[in-house]
Image (tube, rainbow, N blue to C red; front, top):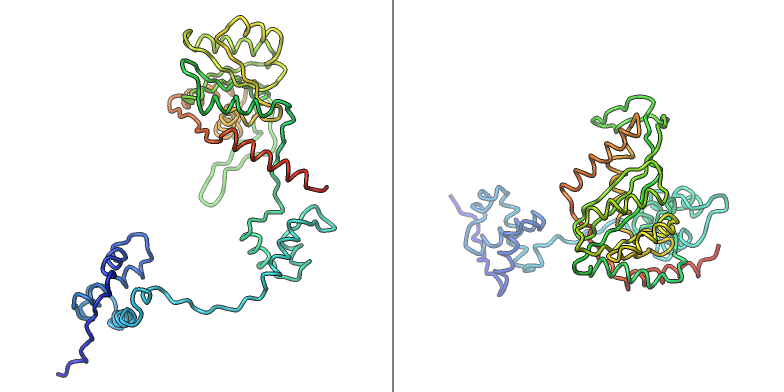
Length: 362
């Protein structure tokens, strides 16, 4: 029986051995590229095409193809070749025109561009407009709310509070304090439909109101632990009662730094008098319209999402019990929020927004 033609020996170029070994043992690169590196290494060791094909469960034609490709092109030959696709239908200038129209103008009949409106306006297909919008991250149908602070001491207050977060004082506790008022005990008029495969939880749009409660909370910046109280109202009397609750739960030898907003209750004369009699308290007011500086607001978002918004409660007592269970579970597995923004980075962002607003015409 005659033998096939003998194959030319495959000799690796200088430096290719290490690169091929890396490719052949990679767990993250495309499987095809890994296989090709394994084929070339086996060929370099003198193994026949038939033996390599049996071991790697490939055809001899495939093994021969990549042996030949390496001999002709080296390592570059193991990568996929670029394949010609359909020629572009629209030039860059046309794409830029559509994007500029979406960003800088409004349709005559609406407040913002939709994909269909832009397609009708430009004569470009809806799928192409949708692809361009997605590529450039353009979402004309969405808005994000904001409010720049008008506080004349905004810079000083930002530096003060951010300094507390990034460099807390020794022998002191930093507490972010606020109240979440008017939490409603809402009872849905019909039982909720459970979530199932292929459909989400069902809930009626209407409900019965059973009263409200106010949640006072103090978040320890260092540990993430939360002190809370639920009260029927949110006057200065209730706020003073919560301050006394804080006072009983913080060791006497520690100073207390309170980060609070400018709500009138927090600045009531009796509240100021109570704080003035206790020198270990240091109050840090957030700038006007800058409640996002108060970390307890983030915690209020968590309890709203996970315990309140989707609940159904037949009484305020039941709502309060749910809040208390959530707080107990949260404090048992607490972690502090990680604050990374510096005062300079915040002020730079506010400056950019201010310049953007001043340059916008309405």
